[in-house]
Length: 430
Image (cartoon, rainbow, N blue to C red):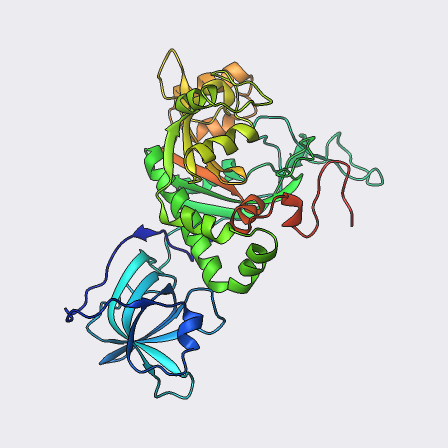
């Protein structure tokens, strides 16, 4: 996903020749513009995403779509516009004259006088290498013990006690394998199934689900990591809205009225950042009665996460710097006694709660050695500790649950409704 996608950058305008002042442009959707049978040079404004770019010596052709129509609107621009910024997937605002088209392929076209790039999208490879991490593993990445153990069928005779000589499980995360590969390729990602033996039938938990995970070497701050996470969410969402408008509109119309406006609200605002400590104070002062009482050092529940998002104006919010005791051994120690937190980050989104989870990884040998020793994991993770002995660098990464992402953008309340064959406690049909 990362290799072919780009990260969002805001409010970058392409260069254009100055034009004389005109009457304010009338804002039209692509559908309304295409349906104008009497176009005669009216000045209009159209916003959407670029579906294609064709540059000739003296003229530039763009096809722009905002999801209101299957057909895109052709924009004709002078070659003086900076076509380098006008890439596939970029969101633009185009002002100009709506005129009859000379081509038989469309009735009208927009003769551009001004093009502003609202969200830039560099269509070049962003440098992430796709790694196919194993489904069967001997590691418990999350450390929660919620694992499905894998054993041969009783009909198969195995000479040893275990087929692999060690207990093995279905993966809960590809992170540890990605950390290995990031030492060779700097930026890596995986997209595949993960499994959690969590005894839950809630509306946001599955026993089998898909995750997008990334790991980045030479990453030294949570701020840089959060920029990648926010960029992934926004760029992917704009691509979905551009390429699958009918599917999204169907859900928004019949299942989640108002979700389109809520989604646009998320996309146009910068995501907020609060610390875990600030989150606890907000929740303590809340007038709402929670099922689970929260004190500093306790984990956030879904009800807490959703409240925090509402408190922040229904804008996605990053919660950072969690207590060390709540998080796995690999997260970087902030060395901030007496609180003692780690450089962890969760992204909370409207309607769902936690969507992303990530952290800076503990790259310092002695810190990691002590954490593993306290947890009794030194022998099992000696290979992981050895990574810190040979050319270790600061690094970090994250995971995003794909089904929860679909819940978020489509407004689907139950995670079981966004996957064809949901697996959960007491249910594994087919």
